[in-house]
Length: 190
View 1 (cartoon, rainbow, N blue to C red):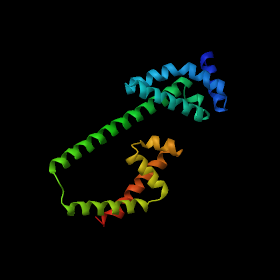
View 2: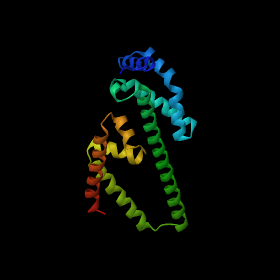
View 3: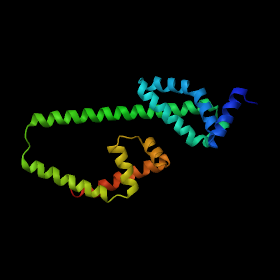
């Protein structure tokens, strides 16, 4: 079954984009940007975030156009899937950050309502911090980097995989193994 002319053109634009053709990439942007922006806006309900996602998606299209497989669907469907996935990841990341911010605010309120801590609490807290920092430094560079990006950078595992240019399964395994190693290292000392 032959593809409609529009779809054939989009497949050709993607093929040329994969070869580094900027004009084809610009043509794809002109064809898809409005639809992809609308899709991101529907998920995120925030124009600025949707614009960021649109930019991220087109960077991904530029870098990964060679991964497009025509047998799996239309070029627009592929681009919409990228947009939807990135939008959902961003939404989850934003929600996680909001929860962390709320937790920090709640903890701050509790600490301030408790008043001054005594000096033995301060010493205990400092000691625990040293133990945890020392344990983190014993992790492999890859595990430490993935854990820091997830827990201190607030990134999703998919975002980490993209930034490190590593498979998602590799990132998940590094975080899981690193957290298990941290638990073993810290458990006996605290």
